Image (cartoon, rainbow, N blue to C red; front, top):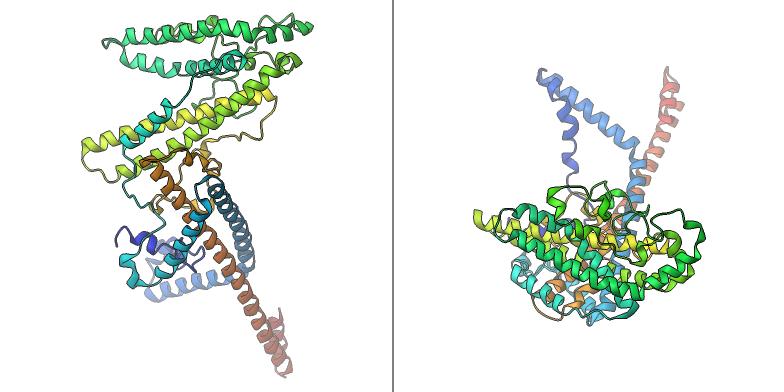
Length: 512
């Protein structure tokens, strides 16, 4: 077999197969293997009788449980077909609304699918058969192509405006920069003793502190009046030494809106930025204690009572909208990083040699760190939105670790049970792919959307066929039991007409 044979003979793609796996005759060995230790010491005749008894028992059990088994298969087929249809409809809606000439693309894809389903059944057509169920570009993206596109997107970012909106936007960016302190600290620990490591770390700290000082003056001018008015109106909070600020940082604390397992670093401790008196005396972290001690006076950092006050409604709404935009940006970045990470893994399969494999592995790990960073940014933005709204926000969904998975474009990457799962909700919207105007990344995005549609369409068709097969099997089962019901009734009637000893017992056995 060749690599192209996988899709040409895969039961997930071939028409008329349903969800049959072709392994039914092999499942009997799971039972027969268990009696091997008992039959190996038997004579050939005894062994033959024991195996026949086991076969007869399995057949009897299968007949007795066939009704419940078919009902379970029908329920599963209906549920899986509904899920596959909803997923395909979501993909097609996104392609129609967001893609250039989306309706024309769908017509082209459907025509290609119909032609392939006809030609794949003719073995003489296999040699020149184009496979629409895998990307046309086998190798995937190169690192240079991907990095060039991402750097171009970064250069397109604009400057921050002044005023309330600008101050809040700058404060959010400053809070995000402070989160990178973890990576800075780790880099400092790994680079201690190297020339320039201390100077570079100090330069980073000073740059952050300068930005924080500049922002603090603007926050005092534009944001603090709202906070002070709300604090003055709340007379029952004089006993709180931290008032009007919250004891927990909105970025790190969960506030009951997410499980601890959904935290960006997977740990059970809170990652709230601590004030100066809370920073432990650890040598590796001493350099960045000033960074962690900076208090960023955003509306989300206020006490819950202050956030809910009418005086804060304007600034709270502004931060909520900005955080929502940050969550959407982080989600788009997460999708991009997942797609390019998958492309790197495909590229690594075509690499040989220890040095080249080591470099490719390092590249893939670096890309996965970018995936985790984007997921963490989305979760931080969502947590702050939940805090500002006082409840989980329905328009920004919860991102679990199981949701952070790439679109699989090759059947070789499918794990058992993958085709019974709904794709992660992050792929319901493919509009982020249209942000690229041209280049290798745009081409790879287009190929990803095309293959995703083809595979979702094939999965929908297979589950539809599975439903038809199960329903036909149900009808045949009814005819089977109806036939034998008549046969046993006739046998019982014949025994009842007999006038010999034991005929009544045989008739009763036939009717039981």
